[in-house]
Amino acid sequence: MRLMPHDVVLVDHHKLMRDGIRAILERGPEFRVVGEVESGADALQLCKRTHPALVIMDIGLPGMNGIKAIPDILRYSPQTRVLIISVCDAPTLFFSDAFSRC
Image (cartoon, rainbow, N blue to C red; front, side, top):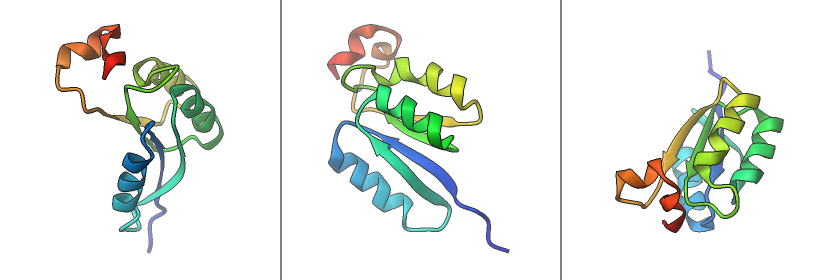
């Protein structure tokens, strides 16, 4: 019996990063990338439509950043899990608006 793949949404303003993550995920049958976007607002709209199992999200996004988008995504798609990725190396930045500089 073959299990259904988990639907994944990729959110990063760098296409190269999204391409790399997609390439890794698509190596096996466990995951299916159902969409990718560059902003938190676009992520929210995509998640409303697709209700993915997982969102892999950068936090330093233009417009609505990743941290601000997460509660809205979970409100519309409560079963979705969010994995935050970032190049920021200062954990305290996650608890303030300073991370927008990352």
